[in-house]
Length: 215
Image 1 (cartoon, rainbow, N blue to C red):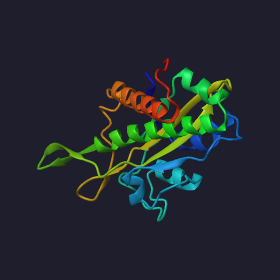
Image 2 (image 1 turned 90 degrees about the vertical axis):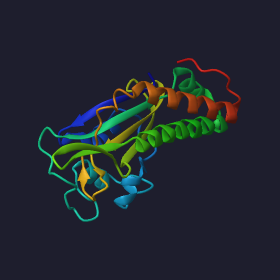
Image 3 (image 1 turned 120 degrees about the vertical axis):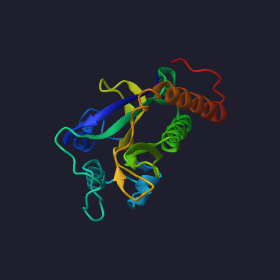
């Protein structure tokens, strides 16, 4: 699969992306993270990810006011989910050996595919709470996600991929910030992989005339 989901727990979950992740990759040329989702917009977050804002969201607080977004996290609470989209090796090699125009086209196609995948997650995001003693599953008012694009593997081989960190807080229709009901997120990995791969292939065909990609 080209998309995989990892559950993020403990207070170190956010620090990994702003401190430890950077040490695994070449610092030069790696772009800053970007915010995605209506949930991020509701918290006044858009464009480039700033470390303090990201850490606040992963801690379950409003980055503007410091107020808690729902229940306070415990030491082992789920803070979010890392949805990582990895381009097929042939695409990473095309990026690595291509000229500047080719590399830009690959970036655009990859980012477009990631955005399509995140959009699908947002459209299907939901949460749960009790109504008259019964557990109800309701649509969430968007998600808050920070996308960190990387160009190499830890071994510094070409590996174009993006970590999409989805915060475990969504706004429910009654105005409360609740946990994302992520029971189906891992089940949907094949769907997310297929969506990412198909959108990437279409983008590369449109931009560069690519007609096939090895996985």
